[in-house]
Image (cartoon, rainbow, N blue to C red; front, side):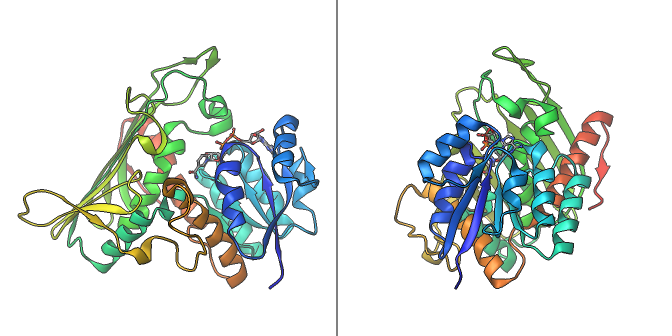
Length: 359
Ligand SMILES: NC(=O)c1ccc[n+]([C@@H]2O[C@H](COP(=O)([O-])OP(=O)(O)OC[C@H]3O[C@@H](n4cnc5c(N)ncnc54)[C@H](O)[C@@H]3O)[C@@H](O)[C@H]2O)c1
């Protein structure tokens, strides 16, 4: 098996926390080049990795012969131009979410990647949480019965601090919707399939985050009907005071059907709660061991912090799809689907009306 060369474009938080260690578990895979527009961040990443091949200009990286695949971990506005440049050079692309600024832009990326015959993946990382994978297995098997409800509640306390490019529409495209709720929209697609129609609301409470103007929402909610007949309620906030952040904060996903209720929480990587008709309440269940790692992944489920290490399976899936010449799960098409719901959420917020989904 020949060694696969990967370039990382954008060497900020997520690249160093998720993608570098994730690529390290992939067999015969080597990070060969780095790019960051900020020279100081690039120099820091170079000293961490010992890599000489580096540039502040992604165009110098995507054309390199030793690069077969790129990981795009930059602010959202740059995803499409970087992805399209990489695809034009025949490179496989794993792009951070949300992959684009709009559904139309996302579709142009998916179309270009399909036409070029390269592998494409959207970093919907929480699909790789073992408990989420087990839940998807139960739903697919029909254990829920007739699906009644989908519920997602993501509550964090980010307060009024400056959150950089994430609070500027021209750089991020959307606020809490793309940053946090897009993952949960993807859960809904994974578990229940297409949305039929939605009505949404958004609100910005903080216009100025420590001297840096914000023009994006801090809170978003979506009410939905799904094609499968179920209803959905999704809410996400950066201003749930006292709720903490990241996996230490509330991330509740619940499904109710005629035969069962299932509850998942990102902070509980290997457990779900199950309710049965007439039961006295929900009961905790540890998921079967075979779901602890992604099929085939060499990751040791007992090594490291499991709330971080499940993310490495995402990189494994990307590399394996390249080697197997098959679509990645989730692909750019999944990124397009969420982006379609996001566009509809903005439309609904602007008009105050329900919006029928056209994927
Ligand atoms: N999948 C997940 O769970 C998850 C988690 C966090 C972030 N993200 C996504 O990852 C992306 C990056 O987020 P982050 O938290 O790492 O941000 P960050 O600000 O920490 O890092 C982004 C880096 O990109 C660099 N950059 C900006 N423009 C560039 C360009 N044109 N070319 C090269 N480098 C450029 C910046 O200098 C910065 O170092 C975003 O799309 C975000 O939504 C996803």
